[in-house]
Image 1 (cartoon, rainbow, N blue to C red):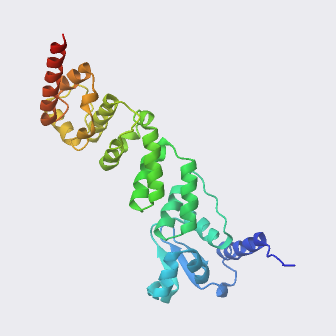
Image 2 (image 1 turned 180 degrees about the horizontal axis):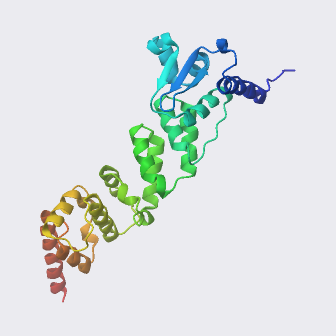
Image 3 (image 1 turned 90 degrees about the vertical axis):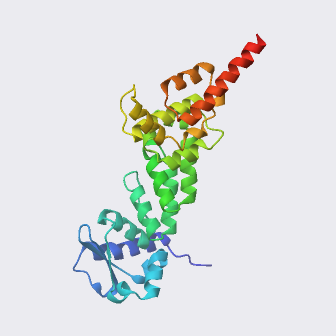
Length: 276
């Protein structure tokens, strides 16, 4: 009969090893061989190279390289607070961590930078489960900058599927141009062309700091420049005659497109006259 190790007890023992040392400075430090210092609040944590290297590809490479930090047995981190680092280091020892709406993004950022695969996966799952409009743009930017492709795809899909509601929120206005362009390239976007056009105009006004409804020539040119890389994604052929008439009168789209629409509108009228 095999005797199975009590993993819960092992987890608690390792957690206590880490916590007792770092919460009680009178403990024997001889068992610890590496120190991590949070520069933000000058708090240090005693750790083990063997634990760090087994949990993080970053630390494994750092110790193999025998760089300055390895020689000095010390690493100073400038980009994280102790409130984030402590639960991560505690997780290294115990295998347990509490992820919530307040810390998920910061833990994900740290885990991505320091190559902690398990935490990247855990945080990504938590964020997906709790995804909402308020965090959509931030997660889109973060997942793109850190090459978290699965989370990036999920973010795009969430925004796309809920685009009709999303464009009504202030968070839509915070989208970067390249992100909005990627969304508009999807032919199955759940808004009609006129709604999509109106959302682009609203986004363009926000990015151009244009607040007034009635625009002067200078504001119109500013807006046209802002939306120039997006407006060609609109299928104006699907607009009603009245919608075409309205946007041409407002002069909010580049002249090149306006001329094409005028020709299209003229052709429409000729065809209708022939039928009559």
